[in-house]
Length: 214
Ligand code: AP5
Image (cartoon, rainbow, N blue to C red; front, side):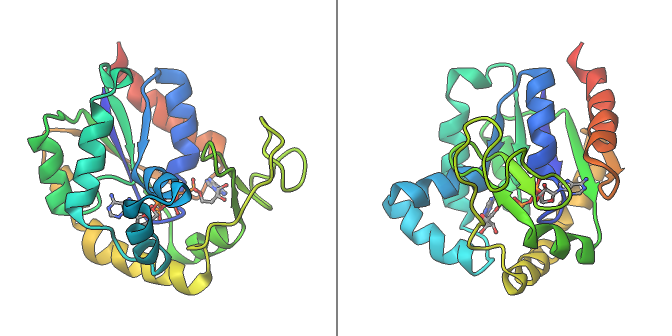
């Protein structure tokens, strides 16, 4: 089962990915998390990506396709994968097909811009695992600490209001064309209201995905 999660920054892709991974046992491939790991490791790729990410722009298609291609060779991807934040451009969508991924379903989270800005300003993350929290909507059990490891949570450097507005502009210009692209393709397309509770969204997405997993 290969599934793409599509939606603007802060629409809840990473949050929902955690539930999908738990139920269906396919790995989450988050290009944002992969890039942040490269930044944290201080690799050449990470240093170049950091400037682009901090400005809210997109890393080049070639780099992203190289990362995803490499990730898909790992044995945990034999039963499929959940793509979170990838593809983000039409060339990435075409590149994904070229590296042999047959997509079963696309899930789009619908969230208006003002909600995105509110969510992103309150977001906190556990850097190591990518687990996502929100100060008000999805707080950790202990303030500023990851529920599983107890380690310190951080605020992403690209989570400032100005950068979020730039990321939204980039989304509408470069990623939103994928909505039409996928609605006209043979993959199943499922849109869901991303403004209701995390649990309600998760129930609706997982019930849709169960039709592919049997
Ligand atoms: P990436 O990490 O992919 O960021 P994004 O797509 O902008 O998405 P976010 O991680 O910001 O949000 P999300 O939708 O996962 O929401 P979340 O679940 O965290 O990319 C970062 C950067 O890397 C890009 O800007 C780009 O530079 C680069 N990059 C990555 N992939 C790339 C690619 N393919 N090509 C080129 N460049 C690439 O939720 C947000 C907050 O809301 C959280 O606090 C959460 O707790 C809360 N929340 C979630 N759901 C709900 C709900 N239902 N109700 C209330 N609160 C909620």
